[in-house]
Length: 314
Image (cartoon, rainbow, N blue to C red; front, top):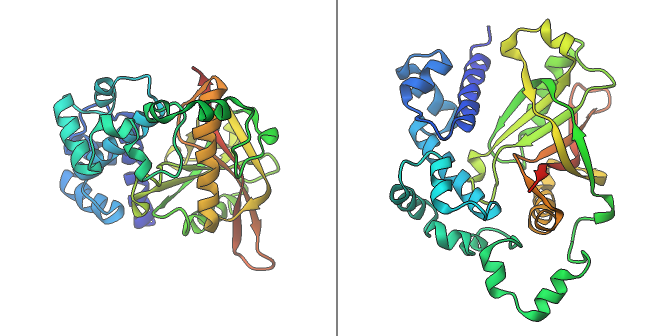
């Protein structure tokens, strides 16, 4: 058994549990039980892989999740967002948010986030407060403010629910992700799990304008058929939740080193397309990946073919 791989698998299982149960009590004992390690060993292994203690990670994740929702879910009251993100009281949430982001949740929602974001979200209170008649007219015109996206290429597509083999990357999105894809791709290829129907779906789990780059997470999903999944140990398989997505495909696949371009494209989808679309976002964005073998070497080259957001009607 590869001990390091097994430890990472257990810790990432815990990270997923935290995301899915952010409203619940997440004690050290509960999280250690999910990992199958004792609390002492779990805390040591968690910190060595994640770079912070489980308690610090949980608090940071809750605050960053709240910060994202305050911007893009303006219809949800601040008190409710605090509860949805696992805070027991509004006062504790406000104190914690102020300590971490150096501003109050109310000010953040009303425009303080712009100190970290390149674009204003059209549905934010800030945008309504500063808008003037000429700006209003300009924003009500047909889409013409996009620097990166060609809106004629945006489409709505339904992704299937899929069994997958999943790899993980922890750290900056500009480097290291290709190596994670290469590792999981080789694992699947050596077991003949890849065919013409296989999809490579990347899931950035964090907003890099909110989460420190070295704390960001990225999932690498390689889809497999259900029949094949039944023959593989359950610990080695995962699930990709499909559903309706807005998709933007690039003319040429984009390298991970060009992350700033990708972020600009996401910003335009979130900030301009989404508020006017009649949809709301549901979850983390998805990236459709192209993987090619580099000549006669064993090295794989991965690039981003398209980006997508999971959506549903408002």
